Image (cartoon, rainbow, N blue to C red; front, side, top):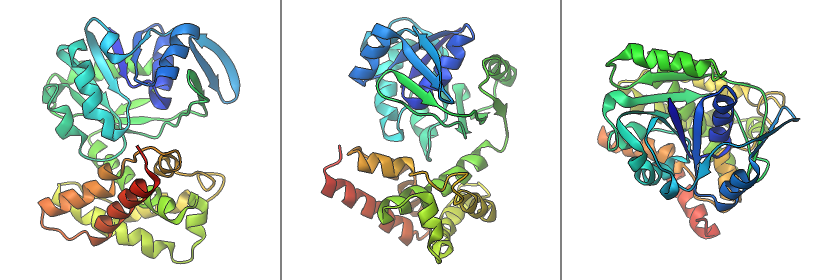
Length: 310
């Protein structure tokens, strides 16, 4: 089985390393020049839980230079890079290539269906964390788990066999009929914490220290819940509110600055259109008013514009 990681950033590098270490045929493609060249020349340096685990010579290419056909493609890009990356690697996919997508945010299935058959799309949500200690350096902590579901459930036994094989490398994947609900729950959490922390300029704990944080949280989640229901997903708003509150403690996530905050700070475009922006778009589709998500999305884009983010 040939496995391609279309995007070898933090999470792609971590999953790819686990599979490669377990003997799978893994290839990375990425567009970040320094990252690609460091892995090509030196191997992927792996640091887990502050322990140096060595260098791993995982084949790594720019998308246009990779050759062959792959049986599984993990897409591990930012949400707004998904279509561009799939366009660059479509020559590496055959008729039955399965795509595994565990990106943050909403709306990815629509894009994925442009490139592969619906029954070859595995959509998921993960609580694995990872990071990079510079180009060519994987620096991560702890472990995690992933919920996964085949969008169109044909030949489901083949998919479950694939999941069993991936789990032998420690990926901790679970096939779940509740995956779409979990995706919406995570999106709801991110619609609150990513956007508010970025706009207020604070970490998660500081947001939680504001006495009226629940009013702000519910202003967004009321819209997420209504739109989710219109999409056929029962969002458990109380659960999402509790998940957010549980992150306020410094021992869980209170000291963390969310990814959208970090992208804004580092001059990168954010994933806002796949979070609050997706809620706004779906709200229009169902004639549901989403004034808070509308405003938050515009404010994030305004901040990107003022900062000259690219």
